[in-house]
Structures are given as structure tokens and as C-alpha cells.
Image (cartoon, rainbow, N blue to C red; front, side, top):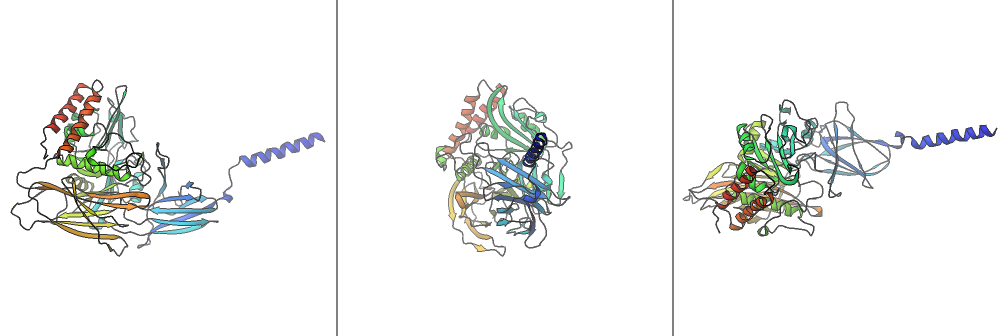
Length: 544
């Protein structure tokens, strides 16, 4: 009898223990099914969705359709846990969340050209929801096509992601090396590569070019010695050269008809490689610009005192970091290095959506990836993390050289149109790197609900100069978005633009410091490149 009671007790105990070990049954979860549609066409569209509960826990969606895609993205910055990006990219199909009863915040976005839609929900049972996204501008209809040249997402993910973000041109960097002496084809950080390098035409206006390379050197030999990063965009054959030195790489890039892009301006080697490689592109919207909280407050080389960069007690503010990039770019332009602006997010590494910073290129003919690359290389462009900015000089978009006759009494007309989802603080005119004017916006509301401001300015240059236009958009919590045009280069006779002495001194100091820290570490050939860069800068005349 005692044995029977003991056996029954053990049996009950086992059943009780198993009940705790089993997963929570689905009956405890509700299914939230969402359909994201364009508010005008009522058609399903791809989108990026965020869902969090009242405790700040984040949830990820699954596609309802066997034909659909739902790509989870979960990244937190390694130095600042408040900087995170948790979302699901869903194709143009219904998607579902499996969630416990409770209160939630659902946020849905698509690229840059749609208003964000944020909804507060109470989900106590299975629920279906249609979310409408309203488009506030259609840039393709105006001849502008977006892209980004700093992508670390996999080739398999990108066909869905470029549609979710409405990104017309994407350039992933599957070849990625961080050690000197190592070929990119054997790169220690390389992603799964497309064997053929053939372009992926998702549709007529969304194309992926999968053969690009990043040299991001953190060690030389066996010694930790950060140099920095440079990208090769649109090369035809895999690159086998190692870095440093960098001139042989530049020569091979030219042979292949590819483009060289400077990553962030303040890597240690950045200012030295610009004159040696004759770099084409400058990442004006770089991979430290995020949708989430700005984190890299003390990154790499410091700005010059003349720049008066804004800080917040912990290092760069978000606006200060952006301004640092602008002013470094202006100094290079004044030295005659006419780099064209571009943008990149490094999505796949950082907590940021694909295409958060992007470059728009204007095309007079229908979109192709080759036309887009040609326009990017000419500088028919603007970069943005939010607002749209269309500029013309005497009816022409930036790109190329504008020749001005000193006898022209009428002058030239600089036309500017800013359109944004929320108001910008003004339109700023930059001439030869100096802020010369801020135009207070007089907005008109577009039929789509955007804020549009159009103005023009008569200019009468008496010597060679360049102009650029930028806007700032302030968001809650002191967050900033911006747009920046490519420069308009104006040639007057045989005069030239010269840097200010403080600008040139800054660039010289940057190179000299790298020569000093690199002796005995990098090769003699690489050190000679630095010394040559120093000579190039020192030979540039200043204007005082």
C-alpha cells in the first residue's frame, strides 16, 4: 500500500515537473496580423516594422504567405546599449506577430519618401490590422534615384531590402579585409560572395551590384595599428592587392573603370590617401548617422579648433559629428580635390536600416545602374538622412564645371527646393566652405502633407568659386537630419579656389601625425606615400 502511494506521488511529481518544462502553449499568445498598404493605391507594399510592448520588449514578425519574406534585424551598438535597431523588413505580403495580451506600439516605415505611421494598440485577442502608409514625395517621378555605397547586408537579403527601403541602387561589400598583407579575396571579414558578380535586377528600378571591396585596415603585420577604410565600387574583377601601400590599388581600380570612395573623413590615413589615390567619392552621409541614438562621440582623429565643432560633454553631438564631416569635405574641395558626395549606412554591422543615409542622383533618361553610376561620379546629386533638396544653377543640376564670364552683368540664378516630412530650420548657402547665408523658410503645404520651400538667389562670382546648399531638420530629443547638395563648381577665367591657411594647416597636421606614428610599422613604400601626400599639401597656396 505504501509502495502504491509512493509511486503515485512520484508520478504526479513527474507530470507536474514536465508541465513547467514544456513551452508556453500557443493558447497564451495572440496573433496580430498586419497588412501594410499604400494609402493612395491601397496596394500592399514592402515595409519596415517595429513592435514593442509597454516594458520595452521588442517582437519580430513572420510572413503569413509562403511567397513572402520577413527579415529580422537585431543590432545593438557595442559601446552604447541605448543605440539599437530592432525591426522586421517584410515584403508586400501580410505578416504576423505572436504576442501575449497587452499594450503595444507599432511603427511602420518605408524608406525616406513615406510618412512614418505609429499606432498604439491593445491586443487581447487575435487581431487583423491594415496599416496605411502615406507617400509625401515621389522622387523617381522627378528623375531622382536613390542609392547607397556602403552595404554589409547579404546578397540573399538585399532583393527584399531594396524594395522595403525603396533604394534604387545598392552596392554591398562582400570583399572585406581588415589586415595588411591579406588579399580581399581572402578577406577576414568577407561576406558570402556572389560567384559571378552579376548584377541583380530586382525590377526595372531596383538593382544590386554585388562586386565591391572594402579595405578597412586595423593591423599591420602582427601589430595593432589602425589605418582606416577605403571602398572600391563597381570593379569588374576581384582585387588581390593588399594595403598599404595604396597607389597600386588605385592604379588597378582605374584600369577596371571602378570608383574609389573615402569612408569616414577622420580615420588616421584618410587625409593621406586622398591625394595619393585621387579618391572619387566622399561619404558625406556616413555610417555613424543612425535612426537610433548617436553613439560614436569620440571616434578617431579630432577636428581642428577653427571648425568650432559642437560637443555635449561626452564628445561629438550628433550635429557636431555631421558638421565635422562637412567642414573636412570643404577643406578638401578648397584644395582642389573635387570629390563627389555619396552616402552609406553599413547596415549589417551597425544598428541602422539599409539606406538610412542615401544619395539621390538625377537622371535625364530612364534609370539604369550604369547611368546612375555615371551621374554619381559627375556629382549630379544630393545626400540626405531625411529631407529632400533639389538645386539648380541657371537651370542645370550640379556636376561638371560652370564657366562664368566676368562681364555677365545679370549674374546666375541658384534655385533651391526643400521638401520634407516635417519643417527644416532653413536653407544654408555655403561658398568656398563658409556659411554665407541662412534663408528662413516660408513653407507651403503640398497636397501630400509635406513641407515645401522654394527660393532662389542671384550670384555674381568675380573669381572661381564653388557653392553648395544644405538643410537641417530638427526632430524631438535634439535629433538631427540633414540634406546636402553636391557642389556647383564655377570657373571664372584662370583663377583658382584656394584653402584658408587654417584649413591647409589642419590637413598637413593630419598627414604629419600619421608619418610620425607609422615609422617602423608600415613599409618604406607606404611611408613614402604619406610623405608624398605631405608634399602635395604643402605645395598648395593659401588665401591667407
